[in-house]
Structure formats: structure tokens, C-alpha cells
Image (cartoon, rainbow, N blue to C red; front, side, top):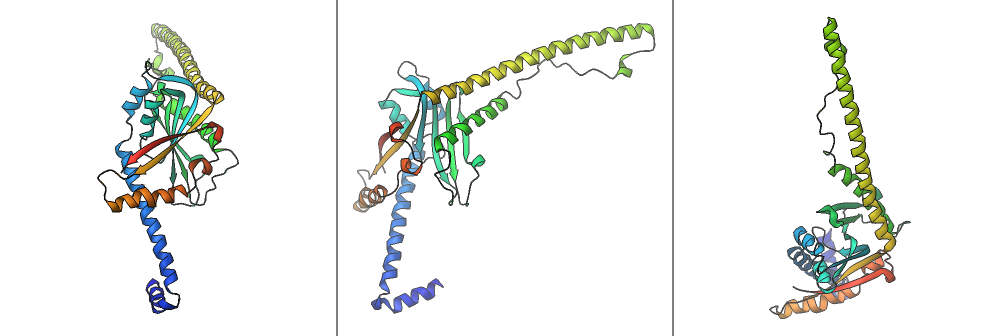
Length: 300
């Protein structure tokens, strides 16, 4: 079908057939420019991403870094890992909020993603840092402007993740006494009175052990619930203190060793296309009063 259409266009090239060819050529050029530079940029971020150990080192440096009340959301296009914009931000602004969430947007080749499956979270160890990674997944027909704001939906799902992650983490932190269940009655009691007395005494001992274990389990369970409540309360306090959206304004330029073709491709063509696209804050209706753009230059 495409060959027939192309042949008909070429046959009537001088009668206006050049217009579809010119339009197709323009679209192919735009797609090539965007895909090529975007791929270079993504690989640059992937090679210079911040490791978990470096995040722990940065956030634990209480001498040079201050933790302030609030919740900060870092937006990036990097799905795997933490973007280098975080390192750049900390080196210039030595202050971080109590709770950090690194958010990346991923478009899936399906029509819709259910709301309960939209957000995927992962905690950055150690747990005391309160640092999370989040991937927000959308289908090609999903509407970005939901009834609930993106911020509220993310925080609600983060609370659910914290609860599930907490109980999974403490799943093996249970009864460590190893007390077995009581034996059946027929196996416990003998036929003689001495055996009956001995069985009765053993039964009393086992009953006391069970009661003690139950009290210890209740105390331990209450302690775990208190720990979980403190984690959720810390997130609520951070939300009440203020949510800040940090968006990376990554400028790409050709490196000094690049040729003239690469310079035109990156410095002029790609930047022209990028400046005419919708920004992240417009897509998710991020309030401008609580938005901070962090600039960084990538040499590709």
C-alpha cells in the first residue's frame, strides 16, 4: 500500500505530489532529531546517576548538610536510579527536606493504567533517611488532570507503600521463643495417678509459658504499630510543613570535540524543539509558588 502511494506521489510530483513528501520528510527529521538527542541525554544521566551509597553519604553528612521540615519531590526522566541533578543541587544548596521523593514519569504502550497500579515505590536504604523513588506510569489515553491532584494521589499511595513495606520488613521479627503448641490430651496424661499429676503440672507450666509468650507478642506488636505510626506521622508532618517540587531544567550542549553536524543537531535543532514543548509543571499542574527549577548543563 505504501509503495503504491509513493509511486502515485512521485508520478504527480510536479503537480503537487511533492507536498506529501515534504511533509513526511519534515516529520521524519523531527523524529530523528528528538530521538537521537533524547537517547544521548538519557544515557548521560544513566552513566552519571547517583548511587545509593552516595545518597546515604550525602544525606548523612550532618556537618555540611541541614535537614529542614517538609517534603521535596525531585522530577526527572531517569527511571532507574537517582539523577545527577540531585548531586548538583546539594553541592549548591546545602539543605534537604526531611522526606525526599524522586519522581520519574514512564509512558507504557497500553491505553490506560489503573490508579491503584499507577505509582511504583521503592525505599532507598537505610530506612532512616526517608528517601523514596517513585515511577508514575501512564497509558497513552490516560488523562493527566485527575479529580485528585497528582501531589495528593502520590502522597496517599506513598502512605500505603510505607505500611506494606514496614510489615514486610518486620515479617520475620516475630515470636523468637520457639514454644510449641500443647500436645493432645491423650498423649499428655498417663494411666497412673503419678503420671496424671506429672501431666497436670506440665500442662500448668505450658499454660504459663503460653501466657507469657502472648504477653510478649502483644507488647512487641504494639511496639511495631507505634513505630509505624511514627513513620506515617513524620510523613504527615512533612506534608503539613510544605511540599516543594524541584524540576530539573537540563540544558544539553555539544561537547567541545563535537563536529559541526553534531553542534547543529544538539545546540540548535533539539533545543528549538524542546523550547516549543509543554513543560513538566504544565503537564501535572504543579503550583508555581511551590516549584523550584534546578538548572544543569549536559555536555553530550
